[in-house]
Length: 618
Image 1 (cartoon, one colour):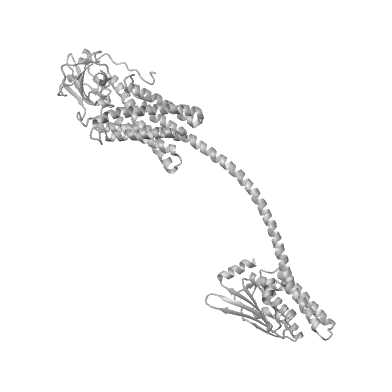
Image 2 (cartoon, rainbow, N blue to C red):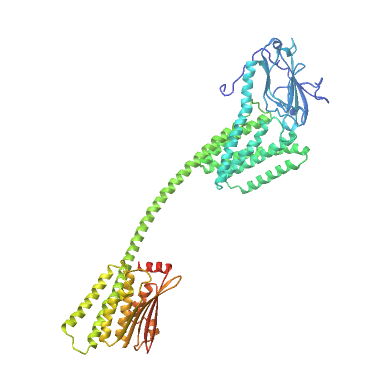
């Protein structure tokens, strides 16, 4: 115990005579020492137990022993004067507060230490006079007073000022810093409501603790206003303290919260609006009620922590138990039921800092573990998703391969039908309608032509991405050569008209589609039209925004019902022609009557269409 709370042994020289301390109320003139009414007292003293409800001036008198008259290093230490006062050695003033009338100076927690000049000491009967101006609502009185040699008094003064003033300063700084950090955490993450309430609670505690360190009533005009402000701060602090513990522990006490809100609101309003005479009583009532609320909440949380048995709740319960012990000790000291050199409540800020540091560390570690668990779960989910995605992609790839094979088969069927099939039809028609006997070399020529067409189909299937730089006239030459020969054999006149240039560079794939379209159209003329004339036209038209390519195949044959053929989708040849035009992004029209048939395909070229055509050919 001596390491924590040193026991001071005072020198026998210049000590206060035991049993010589007396006190008396001042008369009408508070600056005049009373002649009667002196009663013996023991320091520290609160005069309300002796003179209940008294607000005014009390004089304290104490004698120094005879050794003080020869002392060269005599000193005097006064622990506190509640509320303001002055000190005399014999008839000479030694010190006084700046304000002895309202607004009073606040010396109730101010430690004073003076070296007594030898000139002030008499040969005998040296007396210390202390004038105290106190307020009934603020526990008026006088703290410990000690006299002795300078070294011993300096040790007592240093110990007292550290425990009663500097400890409070450290408490205030720690509470303010921790509270501000918690408020910032809440501002950045509104879900952490417990941090917000703790931050608000800490700021209110700093405002309440200002009363301990203040030496004047500023910024208020009198001591009662200071006490009202201090009491409101305590009421709000207690309310925030309760809400913090409930939010932290995730407690649900709706009725208690409503009752707490009601008591807090009523207390604050009454403290603000009641007349000054009633405010004094309200100070005592609100202080008592919310002190009991504070104690009750500390006890309640012990049962809650025992019930849920979580680490963080147990840690908070231990902290609240420490607060409960400090609060009970402070209350007993204020009621003069026990004596203490200082109030342990000054250590609450340090305890709060340790608690919040542990809690922040605990929350941080817990969140890190949650992140690690979430990362593990995410990894498992990703692995499962990767397996599912791989299976899905494999199935899609298999479907795409099947679709590609089907498309390739369909394309080969169309190419065989429109290219190789057209060549066969032309050859068969030529043989059937030729009256004269064909020679062997003529048949050989027909077979070679069929072979060349089949080879062209095979070659075109593997070279669809090569760019073609030929003009329309160069492109139409082989087609015109093959069909003109057949038309002549069938006594059909043909005319061919093509543009000088393509509207843009076409790939081999596009030209193959166009070639197959033309071949199928001319083959249908040979097979079905019974015409005497056939014509082919390829023209381009260009304006400011786009360019158009038009292909026309016409004859003067017997015609057919175009609507019925189109609606019924009769004939693979007609379907193939429509599909090829659509693939190139064009429009296909059929006009047919008993006077002939005209097939038209129109292709419009601009940036948007070019992109569409390119997409189709891929």
